[in-house]
Length: 579
Image: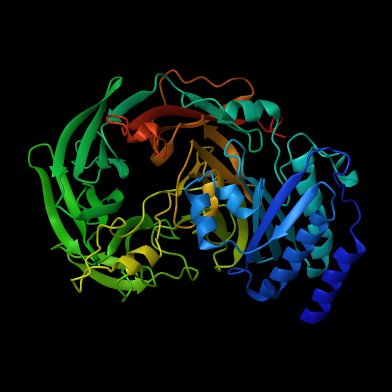
């Protein structure tokens, strides 16, 4: 069966496809370098990888204005690209325009083929294309349509069967081109909240935003009433300190600070009342050199910081499980020196003396780690779905039976934070507990993705997902190098087959480090328009480093982190207006 289908697939591109518009009359020429396609998540469709790649590559190569290069890039070429070296293009093939890669995903209902085009010109956007085939017999025609969309996006031409497409294409399978006004609003900077018409959710900033600038890098933050006095504190984690802030009137003011032990490298910060004493504990997931060294801290105005447990051999994360119960989850490191993440995520029991006992293994899909996922009730059917961010910064949605339902074609949740010591910090050729130069250079970096926040702002009983969207550009192709140039925070809602945008913040410069969202009490003067129904209010915290990844960020005093606080009101368009 597989062999016969591959033969049919090959015949498809030799015979040509119907409906594909080529670009011979456009005058513009492109040079595309095709890299390998990924089939790690293709399961029973893994055998299609080379055939699908060859089909797409060959069909594009038949266009007189497209030159396709099929090759494996050397380490020297990859290094030049990663450093944005001026010799990169000459090392590859002259003036190449795009590096093209792709992936195949086995879904619960069909197969998803994705193509990503990374521009060598850093002023251009990464192009993402996706097609879902519910039946194997549809793969050829769907790849035909995908090729049409690639040509259309590159040359501004439409295929014959796409002439009637609306200005906003919200289909699960296609490349999404949004309305010009929406594209314009996306370019606005941090003071703007932009909503989409797709879900009828309106998000409006209420009052004046509050900001705080912190010298140096902030790794993560958390918010909650950690001393039980009825007022929320803001907690931040830096490379050397744990800090407490409070919001007062139009300012965010510092309250307390604790120095962290030398060598401690935190990668996640959360607050939760796991011991049920009415006060939130602070959970710092961290390493020290090669060992796991998490800790639990409490704070009060009278006593300050108190460390309840330290050198904990578990990575820690308080979270809601699939039944909305608060649990403490944990994961251990692997057995080898460079394996900083082991297999399996466990529910832990917090004992009265703050020691931890392993309780049970969480039933999550293989390859999903502690900080990768959250549960969300997306469709209102039996059981919550699992939403995760994978190593390629793609959002995935799994059913309550752990079947893959959807994979985003665009990237979300970009983060520079990874588990373990910073590269070079743990190199010690003379010590059994250190890394050799080669071990340090070759180790796989396990990045901690951005938070997947879950809420229900329109009170329809279905969850929305809040996540960041950092812009990576060409460097998004590389697994070990993370650099971002601008980002937003977006609210996503499930439309029955995919997560689509409901609202977003304006564009932030640099890199969005962390963000938090919490529901708040409605303001006294809230007023809904005649076409809308007020559904609730919330507070959004956004932490960003404006000059991260730029030359300016290397200058003294320019590595600051900024925290912005928004008070938001949410409205639901009335049914007659929500089309």
